[in-house]
Image (cartoon, rainbow, N blue to C red; front, side, top):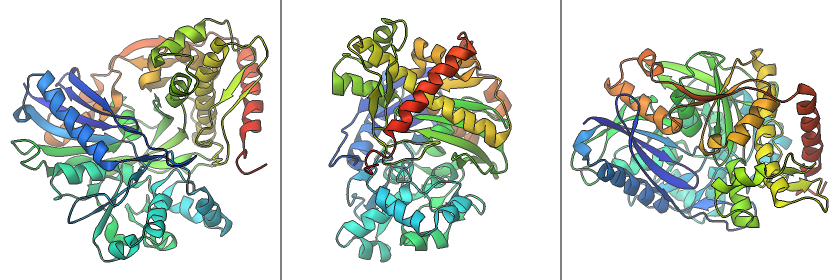
Amino acid sequence: MSVVLALDQGTTSSRAILFDHDARIVAVAQKEFRQIFPQPGWMEHDPRDIWSSQIGVAREALARANLTARDLTAIGITNQRETTVVWDRKSGEPVANAIVWQDRRTADACARLKGRGLGDRFSAKTGLLVDPYFSGTKLAWLLENLPGVRARAEAGNLAFGTVDSWLMWKLTGGALHATDPSNASRTLLFNIHTGDWDDELLGLLGIPRAMLPEVVSSSAIAGETARDIFPVAVPIAGIAGDQQAALFGQCCFSAGMAKNTYGTGCFMLMHTGERPVHSSNRLLTTVAWSVGGRTEYALEGSVFIAGAAVQWLRDGLGIIRSSAEVEALAASVADNGGVYLVPAFAGLGAPHWDPYARGTIMGLTRGSSGGHIARAALEAIAYQSAEVLEAMHADSGIRLAELRVDGGAAQNGLLMQFQADVLGVPVVRPRVHETTALGAAYLAGLAVGYWKSREEIAGHWEAEVRFAPKMEPVRAASLRKGWERAVQRAKQWEAGN
């Protein structure tokens, strides 16, 4: 049996999924790993945990399918994106914990860059906003705050990468230091117009170019696994950041098609074709992928806290025992009872971009219950996505015919129906839910001829369920107005305003 292995390295867990030629799942293995919170607003991962969990589930998935590495046609990698890793080129050991994309420690540094009038310069070249979310200021922080690290970096002894680069380095035994344009475009260091690292931006952040990985195609054989990883060399042929991989897995191959992924965060991407569309509404312009020498772009709206709000209900408040229980608890009440939860635990992403916002619950009365809070948490995910879609409409001039959805929280029927209601467009969930991993598999399979074309791939996409809007538009607008009021009260909280 010939299969493609997708390594899906996420924020809270590492997964490995084997796909066959019909894009069906053959086996899955998953393992959570440690989350590290050194200070309020800080979040880290041990890169060794990332690697050990990822290679462990890869081997486990093969064992579950009763297959070996000889059955692997190719490996595709998809990953949490802006998370920043620095390691020693000789020993392969990380110099510190990885700084996770949700980490806000560089908020003041970003404010200083914007105060110097550099925000527009970064935006024009990278398509991004100057925000702690992205890798560049995280890397600059490590260089400035870890003794001896800058000197080692300038001497060419240290390597920087997002998680895809770290995994490729480990998979190839240090033979490959690379990334793809979709991940590079999330660093604040990559010029999306020239397709290369930008020396001016590197200079502004004080980052030595020698640290940076080579930028390779999203769909091409970049390297092969080392013999101590698998007994045979397996080509690493697909690389994409998790949200771009999901866009590919959802077969959004034409300009105007869009998907929304409901994971730890919530990420909506709209394909815009072979030209970057500058956002006037505080969205991100990003590389979707580079395939066959052709670079394609997307508009993106990033919501920092989505499924993580449900995890907070479980781990922080203790009102549910498992994430799966949230739908029943939310359905125990007829509506939100006037309660709004703004889950700005890591600030607010698009279109607000407020690193100083903090979470808040508004509208509580003595009649408020755990059901109302659970419902407010789910509704917050939908409201945040609706804000992003409105901005996309304004930037692109395109009104969606439908929104394709995926990710863990997309399995929540109450949430998906409410999402359709507040958007006013149908929400469509596909047969294969693991579209992020599937996108990485497709990119790898295309590179080695396992799948011949995008048209062949698109033939595998099937809708599982379609949620049509049911709520009266007047009611939806009223709920949205309540959300907007709650968001205004959450903004700039940490800044003392």
